[in-house]
Length: 447
Image: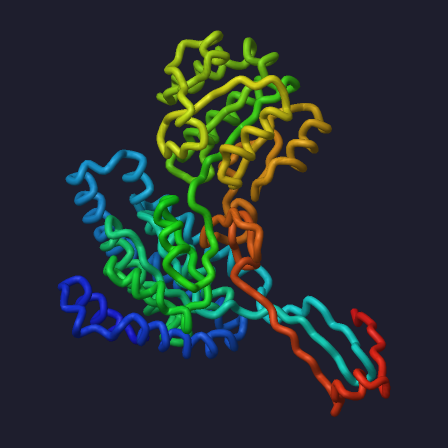
């Protein structure tokens, strides 16, 4: 889709003159047509386009900054909570982060056209399983404008086209970033449909009906929103709703390790989906851990809501049933004492969101049991849950985190944005010969 056409669509949506804009199904159909051209691009051209995007972001940094200031000013007037404002801000640090992510993507091997299997079925009948793009990916994401850059870059590297819908609170920043990325990508030779920005909220419902053109939806938002997407579309949906992460401090934990791990997991970025929300404490280590942990959390303005077992050792608010299984996205922690490892595992599997959960212990057998039985996309020992991130995993970036078990799980980087196809090379063979016994298969994997 050309820049002028895209801007025309945006302007019509923003002004309410939607009748003058192409229908969402028409837009998606054009993107789908370009996705086949996108799938055939060489790794060299895709990397060239990524480099162009990185350079353009640097060149237009002031325009992006001014757009972000408009969004921040509007958000402050609306008295949006401080943690959300932090997520909305696109400053020099976030620009450096997204550029580092792009450079990392460029350095990664090509995820496309990789042979996963080469098998001889019979003489002159060769089967190959080869990676390929998914096609058209629709991503509906929250207020973080840096997510737009990460998603665009990942889709570009993986040969997918993307249709993006960002939060209205970041509209100016998203528009500025999109314009820069779109111009850089098409200028490098990428098909015009590689990236599309949808700005009207009403377009979401139309987007959900485009199952003939959109191959995958990735929603990033509240539990209710993600469930709405799943309930109102035939398009496959990948992603997660809540980020209810736990840290269990075992009886054999090192307190000097546990305190900074918990403080980092809660406060390094409290609104992130991989920030810890619940701390489970083995009753035997509670006397040594809790006073030191409370001091560290008090220093970082974290409010503790604890059960009676917690309040026996520190002064804090009382925790109710509603505090467990809840994503606070704020400087609040729910805390509970448990009798042992099995109770902790049960609690996490019942109240968690299958995102990322950690055990702090020096007991290798306890850690192994925890990692075996906790049913989450990420299971950690002795480190912050904040490591659950595509960039920190060396994926370059991520389009989101999946807590499902099909196709992709955990931070979804390049591997989660490709699928595969089977190629069969023959020499006149027909199935009747095999079905009627005139020929037989001789399976042999070829390396």
